[in-house]
Length: 153
Image 1 (tube, rainbow, N blue to C red):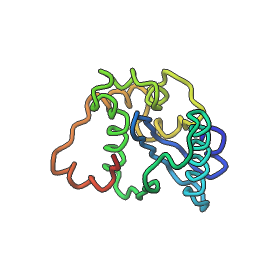
Image 2: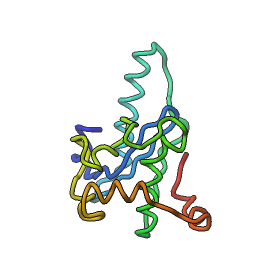
Image 3: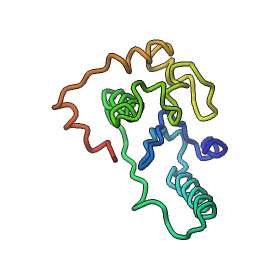
Image 4: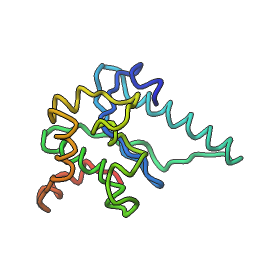
């Protein structure tokens, strides 16, 4: 992923790798099809795991799902949801304790290759504003029901 996302015109905004699933929030910057990029990533990953574990076959059920985000409030919720997923799952107490996401890049505590610093500054103003946003974000149950279609756990 780190070596190919720009080639396919992708901007990785948020990601979180969990033991049994993953979340990627990706901005499409060009007319190139991101599904080709994802296919390349998952084929390479499957081959590496199969070689390591001396096995064959697919690792993932179904195809990656994608959906366009058409409201600003949904984008904020998805950022919060992705970066707090390990906390919600009881794996860590705070998002910054989970090293398998780009949350640390989003709050300025780690430099990452797949992170565009401009997104945080344009959307939230600063790293500390984003960190405060994650800590203070609240949503209603009605709002959560409206955006269930955006979540693929």
